[in-house]
Each structure stands twice: as structure tokens, then as C-alpha cells.
Image (cartoon, rainbow, N blue to C red):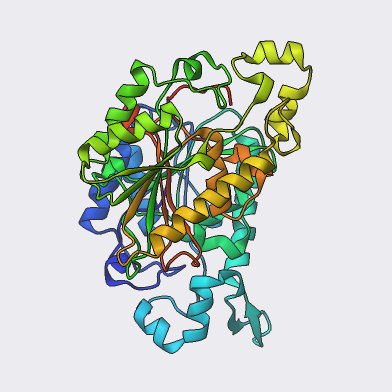
Length: 444
């Protein structure tokens, strides 16, 4: 998670390695709220940046835990913020004025941001802050993961290094550094199968509901279209871990309740437009959410249908393994290589899903007021959209979790052609009352 609001955040100053910024009162209160949100979890170890704003946040969180780590808070330079050495302490507005070309790179091509700084021998050398930060993040993962197999870690750091940590874990390159957002005291959850380089699932990204802010606010000065990507509520087949695909299974009672909880969660959020897969489970989820937004008409998009599992549909995993030995394991480890028998492969799902998504984005962006569009679909379809937003392909399918009734937030800050930003992903706090996703695992 990122530290609480700091004095430099309020002043809109570049912080970086500079350690003059301190937590505001709001920052301290929010750190306490994080502690309360995590209080019932068993935290085995805690790591933080040595910079005061992160260290103080970590200490406040740990003070609220029912079962704090047995070991003391571990401080490491590998969690320091990005080193923007020439800008630190300066107002962002002044940076934009004094370094216009570099600032544009920072916003739109961060991997190309270059600073001329004194080298070891005093001569000026080229320094690239963002690639250097990615190396730092990789070093952190490689050092700490072997120490903590099957344990839960609390990591408290900064916006930049957190983005690098998430990116290096899931394979996102430095040029997309700005494509994921980190709010003050926002919580993200990463599940590592083993050490660095092993499969990683981003369970959730930048959850802020515990702060009384259901969705992260758009970044300052940006007014492009926003999209709320929602997975349908639970079905009986989700609960049974039975493959559904394009069999039109309706919501079960819990799925209807989850849709109602999502509706309550989004009640105060302005929704201007809505699109859904035409299948029963997402359509009913969307209709329940829109009961609080009766002026919004629901459009149906056929290309948002769930993946066709073909002959797997209606079957449990054990039945599939018996009929197709080894293919289920291949689906779970290399899904992009699997052709569903008499169904689709992921490339086919990608092509129709992304075509639909681009139509939805273009339609929103072309309006005089782009506003916020609700999009309700399925597990595989949503994962395809999330991968696409972050420039990833079908081989990253399993990097993202989508719980029943979960909400993700995607902003296009400067219109349809701008780099989208994943502001938050897989928010499920409104469903189970906790930070972790406790929805049905489902067959996928």
C-alpha cells in the first residue's frame, strides 16, 4: 500500500527521495483506517521505505492490528520512492514550466525520462529514473520472497515504487509505468505462487473503500471517459465450480444479493451510460445496479458474451480431466495455447472482446460529456479487457482476478486515444466486508 496523505501531496510538490514531507492529519487518520481494515488478518512480516511518510504510515497501521508481526518493522532502501533528483521539493507546476520536454516524457513516456546528474567521478551522466526504479523493485522481490513462503506480508511504500512492484510482478514494462494508479492509503493485493518469476495473481488494485471513498477520484486536470467494469453476480455453477461459458445460467440468490450490494456501493456514483453482455447473469446484474440510476438505458453488446468452453460447458474439473487428460492443466498454466473442444480459444475471445471494448470507448469519448459508463460482463471477457488496457496479451490471462460482483475502474484521461489508466481493480469490499476477495472461485 501507499503511505497516507503527506504535506508535499497537499502542496503538489515532487517528493522522491526527499525526506522533508510528513503525514498530514488526514494521512494519519487514513493510516489508522488501513490498520482497522487489515486488523483481522494474520500479518507475518512488514516492510517499509525508510522515508518518514511511509515509515510513520506503517507504524500506525501495525499499531491497529490484532495480530501484529512477531518481528519488528523491516526498513529497506529498496522501497524508497523514485529518485527524481533534479525535481525534488519543486512544485509540479514549476517542473512543467521549467522542464517541459522532460515533464511530457514523465507523463507519457516515463521510460524515456532522462536527467543529467553528477556521476561517481563528478562528470555528468544520463540517469533514467523509471528503469532504475524497476530494477530496484525487482531486487526487492528477489530478496524477500524466498524468506516468506506461504506468508502474508505488509509492504508500505510510495506511489512510484508501488507501481514498479506491481508492474515487475505481472510483467508490465516501464513504458506503462503510469498505467496503474496508487492512491494515498490505497491497498493492493498480490498473490505469488512461489518466488519472483513464478505465476502471480493481482487479486486487487488500489482499494480505497476503507477510506470512505468507494472509487478513486480521477487524477487532477483529467476529464476523459471513465468505465466501471463489473463482473456478474454468482450463479449456482460458479458455486459448484462448473464451467459455464455460453450456457445461459441465471444468477442464484447470492448473486442477486451481490448485485444489490454492488448497486448500493455505486449508488452515489454518477453513471451516465451502461452496456452489458446479453447473457442472463450480467444483464440481470446490470439491471439491479441501474435500479438506482433509472434514467440510464442499458445497451446490450453481443461480443461481450463469455468465452465458449465448447464441450467443457456444464462439466466439473474432474470430469474434464477424465475426458481430456492434461488439457485442464495446460489451460491453467498456458491458457493462450488451448483450443476449447468445439469452442473458442483465447485469441478469438480477445479479438471480439477488444473490438467491443474499443466501440464502447469510442462511443463514450465522442460524446460532448464522456461521463461514466457501466460495463457488465464475465470473468474471461473482463480479464481480456484488463490485459488489453495494460498492453498485455492472452498469456497474462491468469494475472488478474475477477470476483462475482466486483468493480474495476478504468480511466481514459485524455480521450479514446490516450493511454488508459487502471485506477482500481476487483473491488469486493462491498460484498464480504473485507479487503480480500472471498467470492466463489468458479470453474475458471
